[in-house]
Length: 209
Image (cartoon, rainbow, N blue to C red):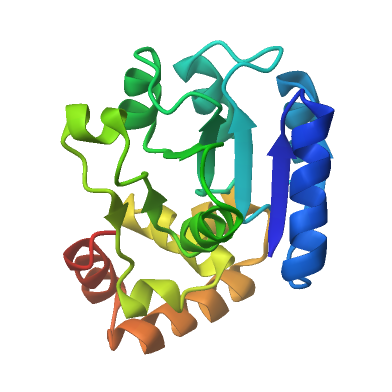
């Protein structure tokens, strides 16, 4: 699993690095300290399973930054992290941007659990936060087993399949050959028990994709 952490506090970055290095050898962590570096890092290495963005780091303003990241990366696992459990201006960014919210008040175990949930396509919200109660969003959105078995690239293909794109268009958008797209489609069909594209998309929607 590849995780990008963006936070301007060196102490927090060092703490997360120590935590992951000690408890999660399967996680490859990269760290930056501002939003501009996030953009440059993703342009150079676009495939991250989870991107953690500090809400108050330099360059972070609001929903526009989330939209920018959506445009330059296939990563669906975006999360806002904050030292405050509730910030009014977070509501629009999180709800409309479809991103997770991880407060820095979580325990180490909860922090890792949140990252793993997000990496599988789920959304994480702390169950005891004032923000969660005020917006009436479930604390965690469970991931259906079929969705959790999809690889990150299969999820990318499925997103474009949902939009009705052809194999050629999908390949162009993802920078891969059509034969590679067909291989990913075969994996999606197998995991969903689908015989064709329509069945696969229908099943994905039923599962909450």
